[in-house]
Length: 134
Image 1 (spheres, rainbow, N blue to C red):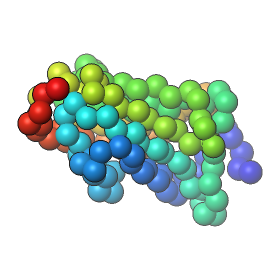
Image 2: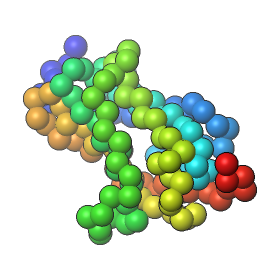
Image 3: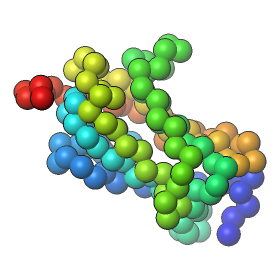
Image 4: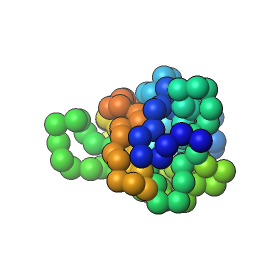
């Protein structure tokens, strides 16, 4: 097991669950506004071994208009890690008020020992149009 103070991440795996319209291309995410989506994040260490998130870790997904603003449009904070993975749930109300278009997001990890690491660097988060507003 790698030392928890400094995680050497060679890959961040994301997988989606939910609607078929969320797409993850590299680190860019695209989804339909107002849909329910789940993004599961797991870390792969330098020796191709899964590095589980542990009690005391905190994972943040933050969405902003651009990387020059302090205003957060959406932030999800994950502190519970089933099977060592960060499960980020996006609910319809989380994106319902966002205008269609492109935003930026990142995913940051603060380890139980206080080490801060951006595990998904600033990337595009696209909100696509919806037709049914129910």
